[in-house]
Length: 181
Length: 295
Image (cartoon, rainbow over all chains, first blue to last red; front, side, top):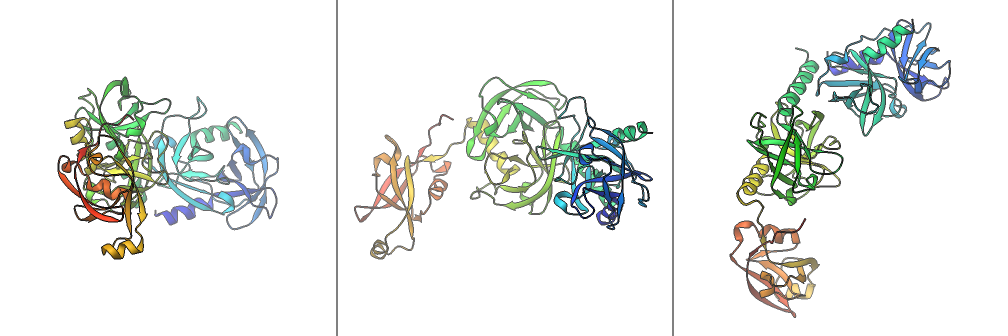
C-alpha cells in the first residue's frame, strides 16, 4: 500500500464530530465496530453529538458510555454506513516506526499527518502508557486514528504535550469498547 | 515489499542500530542531554549542556550509570568530549558526513532511545564553513534533551551531532568530519587553540573620499574599539585605527578577522594595513594564542 491509498482507507473510517450541522469539526472519531464510533471524552461534552462522514453526509450519534479518566467515549451512530477500521497493536511498534494520522486539525477536513514513534517509555500521567509520536497534530485531531505503516489503527490521538502527539493504545480502546458491552 | 512498511522497518532498524552508542549525560540541572560514544572511552556531547566540569555521570543504553571526566570543550562549535570507562558499550558507526545532501531523510536521537525524523534542510547553515565542512540545518524537532545526540542517516550511521545551542532560529548539526577534528584537538591539547590579536572591532563604512584617496575597492573596514592590555595588538594598534586588511586580505567583518587567525598562524608575523589619523600605514604584529576564557 502506498501512502495515498493508506490515506484514502484511513479517511474512510474517520468521522468529524461537530456541535452543529454546519459547524466546524471539534474533533475526530474512528469507526471501531459497525455503528460504533470511538472518540475522546473531551470531544463530546453533550450526549447527542453530530457526526459528519468523509462524504459530507451527517448522522446523529448517541453517547453510549464515556470515561473521562481514560478520555474515551463510545458513540452509537445508527445508519452510519461506513466501513470498520482495521485495528492493529501498539505492542508491535518500535522507536522509529512510521505513524500516520488522519483528523481535522484547525478545521482542515481529513488532513493527513506522518511521523514516527518517538519513544516507548511512559510519560505524562503516571501508570498510563501512551504512544508518543513525533508527529505534528493540532486541535481537531483529538479522537482520530493513529495508524501504522500497514494502515492498521494502533491508537486514538488524545493530546499534544511539548510538541509530541500522545495517543491511547488500541488495546486500551478495545478493552473500553468491550466493557461497554 | 510494501514501500511504506520497508521505510518503517528501515527507520526502526536505524534507531536500534544507532542508539546502542547513545548515552544520557547528566551535567546540568533537570533535563539530561544526550551523548554519543564516538571512539572507545570518548563520548561527544553538546558543550552548552555540560554546565559542570566535575562530578559528571552518564547513563548507558542498558540503564547503568558511569562516571564521566571532561576532556575539553569547543564552545564555538558547541562540542564537549567526556572520557568514560565502558568498554562493553558499542562505539557509534560513523557515516560520511561529506556525502550528506539537502533532502536526505535523517533521524535525531535522544537517550532512551527517543527519536525524531525529518530531512536535512540546508548545508552551510548559520555561519561560515570551517575547513571540516559546513553545519547541517535540520527540518526536524530537537526535543528537550536531544542536544548532543546523534544525527543518523537512513542506514543507522551517525553523520553528525545535533544541537539547539548554536542558533536560536534553526536546529543544527555539526558534521561528523568536524566532530573528528575537534575531538582530535581536544584529546591532544584539552582545548581548541585559536589565533588572537586582542582587539575588539566594529565594521564601519569607509568614507568615499578616503576610498578614492587610497584607491580602495572595499566599502567596509573594521574600526578598533578595544585593545586588550599586553595583547599582541597592544604592541602596534591604537583605539580608533581603521583596519583595512591583514596580509593583503581585505577585512570587512569581525568574523573574517577571526577566520584569518587560525591556530596555525600562532607565533607568525602578520601585517595589518590600517588608517590612522587619515594616513595609511602598515603595522607589524605577532599573532598570539587566545587565552583560556572562563566560561
